[in-house]
Image (cartoon, rainbow, N blue to C red):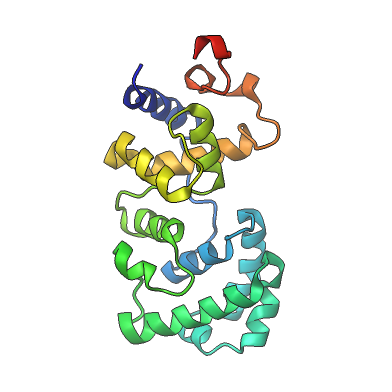
Length: 213
C-alpha cells in the first residue's frame, strides 16, 4: 500500500470515528480565533479556552485589544505561559489589523505571517477554519500521530506540513488535521497510546510488529 492509498483509508475511518470534529479552540469572532491560536503556543487548548472566557469578555473588539493596558492584558493571559510576549503580540497585531487591514483578518499565508507572533501553524488554522482554504495545521498531535502512522519521517513542523500536503487530497486537509488532533487527545496520546482501542491501528507503523512493516 502506498502512502497516498494509506492516507485515503485513514481519512475514511477518521471521518466515521470523529464526524463532529472541529477546531478545539472556542471563539465567536474571527479575531478571537487568531488570538486564541496565538495563546495556544506551548499551552493546551483546554487551558486557552478557560483563559479566553475572561479575555473575550474584557476585550470585545480589535480596538479594545489594541488599546488595552499591557499590564492588565499580561495578567489575564499569564496562566498560558510566555504571557509577556503573547500579550505584546496580541496588542500589536490588533493595531496592525486595524490600521493596515481595516479590521479584517488577512486570507493569505504571506500577509498572516507578517503579523506579530503568527507562524505557519496559526496561519494555516486561520486559512482553513475562517476561509475554507486548504490547510495543514501541524500541531503536536498531528506531528506525533502522522509520524506513528508512518505518513511522515520528520518532527519538524514545516517539513511535516510539506510531506502531508503531498499526500492529502486538497479538500480533506483541514478536517484531516482536526480529526488527527482529536485522535491524538483521545487515543494516540504521547506517553501511553491506546492502540487496542485505535480505529486506525491497521494502518499504523507504530502498532504493527516490526516484522510486518
